[in-house]
Length: 201
Image (cartoon, rainbow, N blue to C red):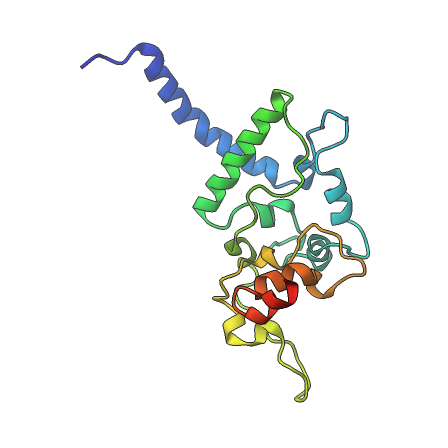
């Protein structure tokens, strides 16, 4: 068996040292929303400029902005950061985020990065369930129909990802309840309810 060459050993040791340092450094940087917009696109515009403008706009025109306005009870300062939703709730989620961020950073450093039209890796339900473990039924009058998530089958084990119905950064005008797009929602309902499939066909 051939002995490993010195550069291979050095590469492995270098990665073993740099990977944890890179992880810790990015944890601190990602804690600030300004970091998420720090890169500039070839046009000179900051990355995610429109999304950031919508995020801080009042009245809220997106679901993300509604979260920013409501604040985050999980945080001591009550603020809401990009990373609170986009950070990954589990270790697998964190690794996924770090891998995509590293790929994007490399593309930006080599001048090949473009503003994405949508999320390549949409949020997982676990990201939303950090705060929304279960959906509390709203207060309603006895004569009113039950709300969607009030039905047990529509609550925790729905089989449809949160972001398949609730659009986070897409503007709703006029503001739709819970930032739902009717066409998008009907396509998800059709998974179980054939009448929705027939209505859209």
